[in-house]
Length: 115
Length: 114
Image 1 (tube, each protein chain N blue to C red):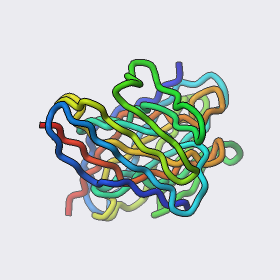
Image 2: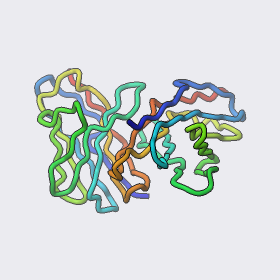
Image 3: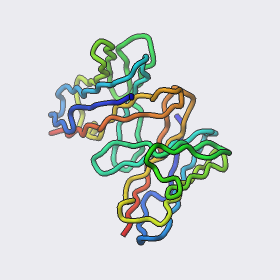
Image 4: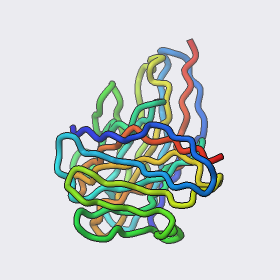
């Protein structure tokens, strides 16, 4: 299957700063990538769908100005958490969309801690 | 709206014992169903999937799942659990609209006793 990497694997930042998380498809050109958020002991919640060369589509309740998604190439999507606050602390996971309805390939996740 | 329910938040089984993890879905049409496993430090890994055809699906690591439309269920089973199976298990369904978006259940944490 496809390989998806995320960088960094964990990050600690101060409240009010911005953090960028990269999601790379290492062996597949992904026109679609998904970004999920996972709180401890909870399920994955879809935040947005990232489409190469176009604006991301955000799920209801997700602030698009806070969670900026850029999908500038077929192998890279980035999620920037702007003006991060402690409540943004979470595990962020990206996935490569694959070909519907086939499986998605997930990155290992990024643990964000905002102090 | 589509939804997935995993009734068991936490399950503990002894090594060598059989395992069944429950998954119920709510979906109007024929669902595309998945089981993923999440281990610490690793991305979600697909165990198996059901799109159509044979309702008993074989997956990796000795897992299987059975699609039962009448019960809206897609339970995951393994005849003999290994200590390395301890992980978080997620059932998921592809949402409507052919967008590929996955809707996940709450997850079941599997603990394996020696």
